[in-house]
Length: 192
Image (cartoon, rainbow, N blue to C red; front, side, top):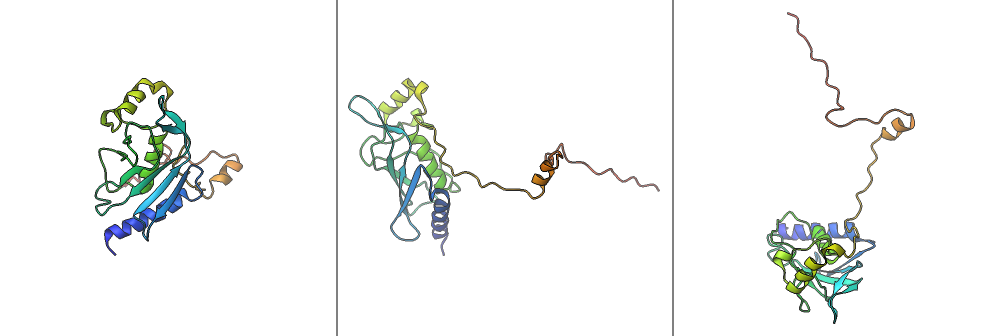
C-alpha cells in the first residue's frame, strides 16, 4: 500500500473517531474508500452575505478535496454555502484559505476544526484576505467577534490513573508527579 493511501485511510479513521455523533460537525465521506472528498456541515453561528450587510447563519457546508498531491500540499477546501469571511472567496463555490503554511503532519481533523473556527470568526486573517469587504468588516467589528464560540475538537478521553482515587479518598495528598515533587535518592558515599 502506498503512503498516500495509508494516509487517506488514517484520515478517514480519525474523522470517524472525532466527529461521529458530534453535536456541531457532521462529516459525510464522498466517493469510494478511502474517501478523497468530504462534505462537512457545521452547526455553528457564522455570517453569510446579506443585502444590507452580513447576516447570522447557523448552518454552513464546505467540501474538502484530498487531491493527488495531498498530504504534501494542503487540501482544497471550498464553501458550498455562502459564507462571509475574509478568508473565504465571496463567489459561490469559492475557495477557503486555510493558511499560508502547510505541514504534511497536520491532520484532516485539524483542518475541519480550523474551518469551523474560521466560520465562527474565532480565526481570521485580514492581511491575506480573499474577501476584502469581509476583511474591512472584521476590522471595524472586532469588538463583536467571535460570532460563536463552540469548541469543535472532541473532548479528550478521561484517563484514570490506578491508585490516585484511593489516595484522595483516604485523605492523603495526591501524588506530585512534577520535577519538584520527585524525591532524589540519597547519594551513596563510598568509604574506602
